[in-house]
Length: 105
Image 1 (cartoon, rainbow, N blue to C red):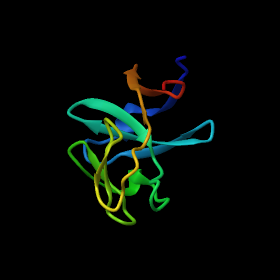
Image 2: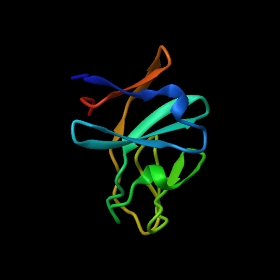
Image 3: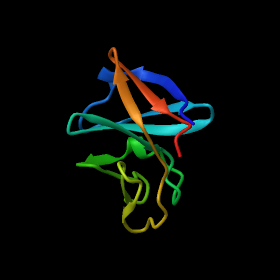
Image 4: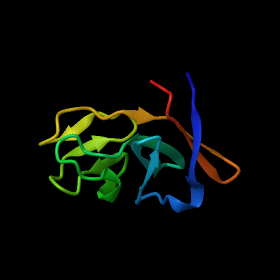
């Protein structure tokens, strides 16, 4: 079931620098890639660092703690030492504001 929540102004996210938001106890990273917004679990399951603080290259985000990489569109791990996928969340922009669907599975 959809549960869209407003999380941030759209202009707070740059093409090469995501942001972290908290919604109902969920820490979600919001990223911009090729003009589209994406959301994913923001805490690295390997080292408990915020992925939104990491280095973004294309659609991958690198954990700032151990340099493991994730595809923030699919949630798939892309480089060691991470091997566990992260959850992704749909994001939409309306009226200059970003909304995340925290109910999406």
